[in-house]
Image (cartoon, rainbow, N blue to C red; front, side, top):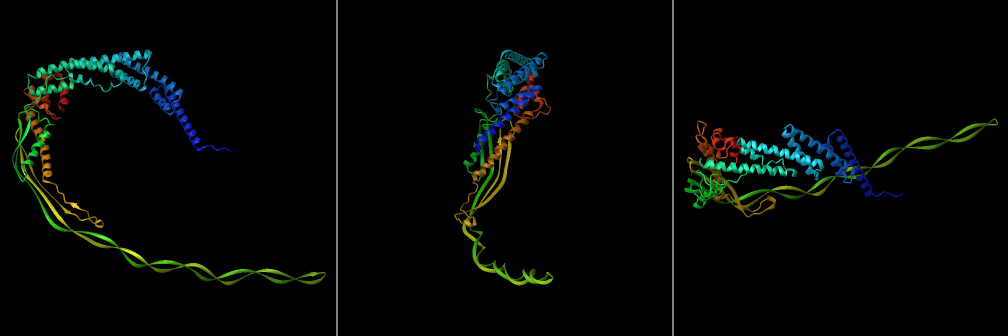
Length: 500
């Protein structure tokens, strides 16, 4: 008999499974289509075709389902346009536009014309919305429609272009008006106007490079006992480097951030020769005995039963005469016999055993003790703000050992005896000073610019200074003071002011 090859069986089995799976998806897709669930039906047809790309039935039925769904979406969008339900019209347009991209085939015939009409209707409503926002002075809100992340499909490109053009025209005119008006109010107003221009996508005609509070460089004066001038200079370098990325600094600013240091930063290292001991254990052999079980044959007496044939005479009568006849019967008898069985006895034998014995490994080393004691104050003078004082007071200690010994059983390896250097210790203090300096400066600026007892600001420039620093707690009064500059756009200012 011819036998089937196992690989052939596997291929046939997989092919059968794919056909069954494809037919199952197609059946479910037809059921979904019959009840009008075209979106689910198309998804199931996709799975059927993925299982069997050669399934022409599913391909044809999916194409028909796509045409029906496109007609259904277009009808919903058209009804929404007639009833001014813009959100429905927009979502219908975006869905069909996105599905069309995913299908990889353009709409044809009447469907293509209806799609273009729906797109134009949505575009007209968006442009009208932008015009309405601009007419009421809400240019920042109108500019937000420029990005429109939902309009990412290819068919929405004309809408995005039309919106970008319309917003660009409005934003450019609005930016020019803002910059002209803010120039009469002050530098903080000009800076906020510049941010608004950038947020609207318009190119500002003027860049506010310097503001009254900004500094261009850092100076450090005073003495720090225990630290060299070179080490002290790292404080100025660190603040200058960090400040270059902050809103406190500006290239070309004439003002100076003055730092005065007074106190001490004492660092000491002691090296003391010593001997280190390390406990370890060694495995040592010794002679001993161990018991074991030895087998042998043990004799014992048992009773054995056996059968024997015993003769006896039986008489019978033949012709009136008694005739004897010998016969046999079976009888069971017993006798004592000697038998043998396996038994075990305990014996001992010499063996080599092992035990752990304590040992101590000693070696010379140098005990290194390092200490760092910082006790100084940093005073910072910044333009327009009160002097800030940052105290630094703490002590650190560490110790280690230096040696060249190496002994594996005791886990001993050479040690370089490194301790944290004075430069590293002071760098940690500098990092803490720098962090606190910028935090204190921001808090001081906010208190100075926004700390109005009445909650109202006399001029737009005063409100602009308070709103200029990114701060989620900027009072509403600061934004209200900017109404003469921004008008209805003040509703969008909190979000704008939260970003530098």
